[in-house]
Image 1 (cartoon, rainbow, N blue to C red):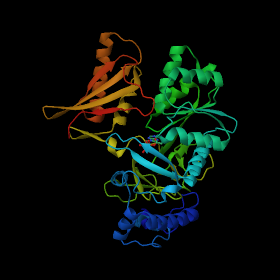
Image 2 (image 1 turned 90 degrees about the vertical axis):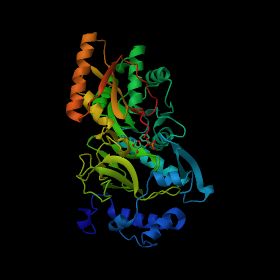
Image 3 (image 1 turned 135 degrees about the vertical axis):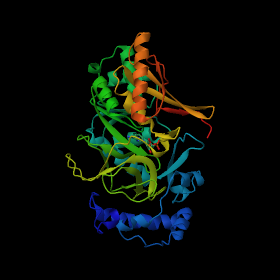
Image 4 (image 1 turned 90 degrees about the horizontal axis):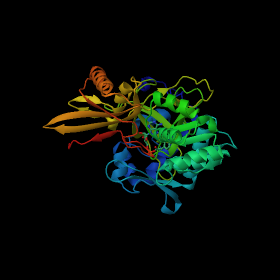
Length: 429
Ligand code: DLL
């Protein structure tokens, strides 16, 4: 459909004229400063000045995580080394981390988009933000830290871990907003229970949760148990870190700060651009980055663009919440399975908690699937048998896979301070 759109067909971006100018500029800049991409663009028949409008975007070849891996650690940097003021890294599950570089202008941009994100969910100058995203190589801690300071809020740089101390600080300093991964927020809720701290004893009103997929059920649970309004924040190190997109108070998708990050949705198989509303892989172009600008970066995240106007009045295009990644896809006995689909089945049982783990193995050339899930309270053995049988049948009916459902006691699965590991794939492929 985009192919058939007129030249001004990208009118769902907040300022298409500005985005178009920025795209032309960033293309010429990457061409001139990153030899790896210059070669790729030459091979595609492009030269400086080839990109003259948003419509030309589709001519530019994609970039992806492999490009970063092949040019490890800093081969895609577009600035002189002395311009780099910060390095971060995202932990890959396999092999080396992805290293990302920032100039001072990039750090200012990170602060700007994180400040906007915090403001969109109601954080104001003078509020205390307890920032329990991990500080260090991960972009979450420092990104939101700079954003909160830019906004004029007071940051408590709690980082993740030491849950009892975190709860004490929440109570004693009275933060109005808490930022962390949703799984760590759940951890804090359990610690509050153990310490006998009720949500009414805190001053919290806003939860800013992200960096991993989380469900509406978990949102409801966190809202009820922390007495907050919970917002989904999205981002990735390669593009900037946190603050690429966030929900506003309308909570109807996440606004992408499209004056800096230009989104597209593609069919991951054909690589064709899909029309607004269609689900596919999110592709982002960083329009204003200096040190590590990436054009048409394939995020691997599955979403869709929601171009309709938002009730909040913001004009930045929205995207649907991310429930899955392309590389999460498990193929078990030929059946495709996203771990989040398992979560959606388990959510239907009130006796089961949100803590689960999927274990895939191979025995005598046959794939096996085990789902470990914590029960939310004590049950008799008969009740447990009946429950696991019922959950197993529902997995079979809805997902087409036979699974062994192992119900485990509350708090027995590993808890994480950052991103939770949901899948253990023991197959040697
Ligand atoms: O997770 C940046 C971040 C920090 C985002 C704090 C939000 C808050 P990475 O470690 O590079 O960067 O991981 C990026 O995490 O491609 C998604 O697959 C996933 N992800 C991030 N936010 C969300 C979200 C940070 N709200 C990868 N929902 C991304 C679902 C998310 N997945």
